[in-house]
Length: 204
Image 1 (cartoon, rainbow, N blue to C red):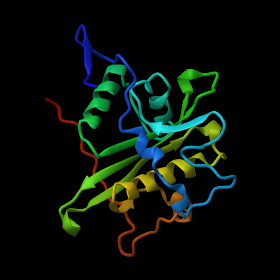
Image 2 (image 1 turned 30 degrees about the vertical axis):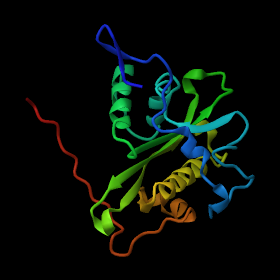
Image 3 (image 1 turned 180 degrees about the horizontal axis):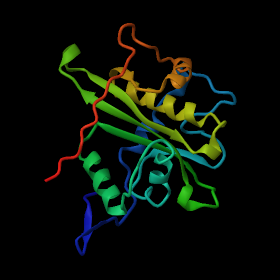
């Protein structure tokens, strides 16, 4: 669905997903090496829970509020959220923002309780292969201990396999290294340090 404007303001007529939910439904967790106790999967994440793509309705379900538990978010309006959503959707096979929703919560504004993103990078190397990056992993503080972080990360790993990524990488704090190692990630010898440069805003 194309974006809809009313009086110059971006709005939505119906809920729209960032990518096809059928992709999640097709993931075969029987082939996953990560084990869950008790067993859970994207199709059976637990009572009242649902794993699905980001939707246009998630601004009102607390998606931005959840991200603020991870990092600085700033003041983002619904219009900004929808513009960025549609910008991402116009880059097919690239952005797979995935969320966990509590469908039975008494607080609809906090219904999105977990999220993680797969970004698929198009490469010239390895015969024009694609590489996956795991980004923006966070689970609501009050829902931790239910294997949901493990579930959302493993779902992204399975999505990367489904998209034929030759590898998936992430950047994390030192204290999180053992956690990601338990899920199958490993530090690359000679390449374990992540460097960054923050670019200051220009004054025009």
